Image 1 (cartoon, rainbow, N blue to C red):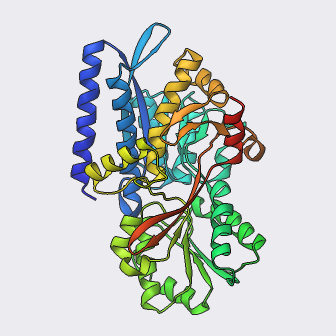
Image 2: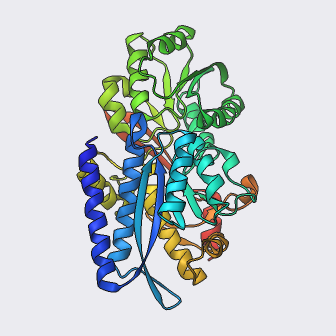
Image 3: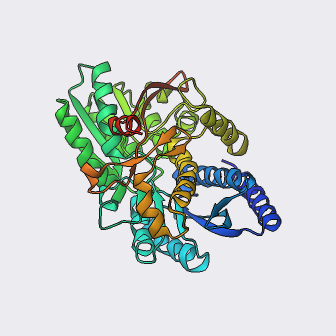
Amino acid sequence: MNKLKALSVGSLFALSSLLMVGTTQAEVLKLGISAPMSGAAANWGLGQEWAARKAAQEINDAGGVTVGGKNYTFDVVAYDNKYSAAEGTKIGQQIINRDRARFVVGGIGTAPILALQSLTERNGVLMFQSAWGKSIKGPQHPLTFTQSNTPFEILGPLYTYIKEQNPNIKTVAILNPNDATGKETLPVAQEVWDSLGVKVIDVSWYERGTTQFQPIAAKIAGLNPDVIDIGVTPPGDAGVILRELDVLGWKGVKTQPAGTNADQVVQIAGAAANGLYMGFSGDYGGDQATEKQRELNQGMIAALGETINPLQIAAYDSVYAIKAAMLAANSVDPREIAKVLPTIVFETSYGPTALGGADLYGSPQQMLLPVMVTQIQDGKVNELKRIKPAELEKRLASQ
């Protein structure tokens, strides 16, 4: 990842927005992002920033958004939350108090986003985020929406597919980062594996920032599970873990439910990455992708040298969701927009989409998106199956 290249891309987007504002005399609405932009998960945050800026630029270049006879354009402000609650609080204060942002269009990491949420809800700021914790949604958080799939959407379809393809698997060992994201994901994973008749024989944890994974890999490989599930491990760590397991001679089924970036995993793990089932990736340059997704994929490769993933593309979709809700509400008030969002169908990179999940979360705060089951084969990600949510199918049929 070339951080300087990423920064230069952001500067070009910002210059374009400034020129647009100067031409139209539009009022600028700040759109915040809180995501890791350093460490093993850096590509998630840098890519999310790029995608949000891309959406903002498209909307600004098309004339912005006119609401109540007044024109508005978007400007993205993005910060590195370092995957920590302390940084999440600090960034929240910057976004809300310094930047005066009314909207957050990207958020990654349960701990930092929970910290940010305590500020956004209290200050009337609407937030789209990708944290995997269930506790972040519900009627008590009316201004919070989830922009990408979570374990509750992913794990059932992913593990079921793995079991269908590998019917003889009986045992699984699970490894996760020792933080809020890992801890909220584990119970869901255990429940799904158990429902499929696969016994969880070990649960291991590691601290984010760990660089030496040989002891953990040796412990897990020594148990010889049929499956190793590396949970919400980011791509940089995943590559090291897979490489260590390969050195130890373990040859079972491997899955990374939060697998987002096959390129980085392959770069680090090499051939050891082959066969890895991923639940949070997608071939956005392939036949199952939309034309817009193929365009965004090429743009991400040109800008950051990597293919786009669901976490990153979520920020693009969230900017367009806010635009649609502004027009539907005829308002820029985040509270009014939050009321309208669950009632509308809006365009995203996937096509028409809506919010749902009320039966599970207590209110419709989950963006309804396909679950994409992928696998690394010969060093490339291969999309095996794209599963559209039944709730979305029903919603679109009723339009």
